[in-house]
Amino acid sequence: AQSVTQLDSHVSVSEGTPVLLRCNYSSSYSPSLFWYVQHPNKGLQLLLKYTSAATLVKGINGFEAEFKKSETSFHLTKPSAHMSDAAEYFCVVSDVREGRNFGNEKLTFGTGTRLTIIP
Amino acid sequence: EAGVAQSPRYKIIEKRQSVAFWCNPISGHATLYWYQQILGQGPKLLIQFQNNGVVDDSQLPKDRFSAERLKGVDSTLKIQPAKLEDSAVYLCASSLSAGGWSYEQYFGPGTRLTVT
Image 1: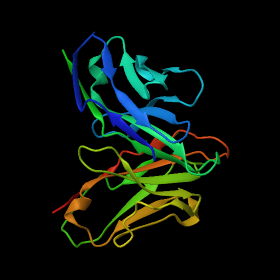
Image 2 (image 1 turned 30 degrees about the vertical axis):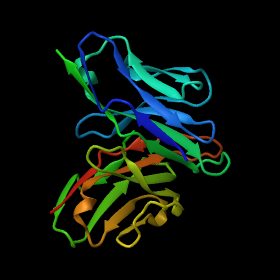
Image 3 (image 1 turned 135 degrees about the horizontal axis):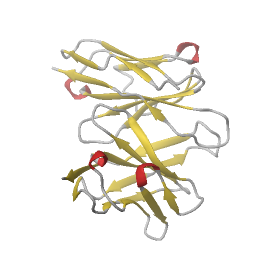
Image 4 (image 1 turned 60 degrees about the horizontal axis):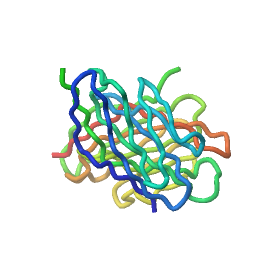
């Protein structure tokens, strides 16, 4: 069974300072990992994804994440926070159910981390 | 490119009533998903369609929830009768299907259901 644990339910940082949102995963297979962002009253948007290529993944809006298999972690970082980054962030793991046929992937979401930016 | 459309955006019903949600995926996306997001939690997959066939409905409470995707395009999710614990945001997502690899899921804005 696959799962993700987001270690912080709420993170507050000052504008212009670094952001770190922590995520640990558990998976029986070689996982695909994602970070999604959810702004109030808007749909979930994909920030970045890891699919067994480079372990350092760059996403949109200056975010990046590093896949560390030895630590089973996939933490999300950004060098300098902006007010528009305030949102809910979800770490997501994808496992295949049977083989690698498309349509068999299943996303399991973490419980989310609410990021607050202090002016 | 138009995104995933959902309606209504908000719905308030009393327990034991029925409710239906509608989703129109991105044109050309063969795979459609319904998720339930309870306040303070991450989305949980309820059902996944590939064209008009069900791939996974293992977490759908089938005694009260039903979903269909006639003609492999639009989909409806129904709850009958609703319970208080069904209060949540219901998200629809869609993704491309080309075989052999995982593609990004695109999410709609969701329908916020309140059961009183």
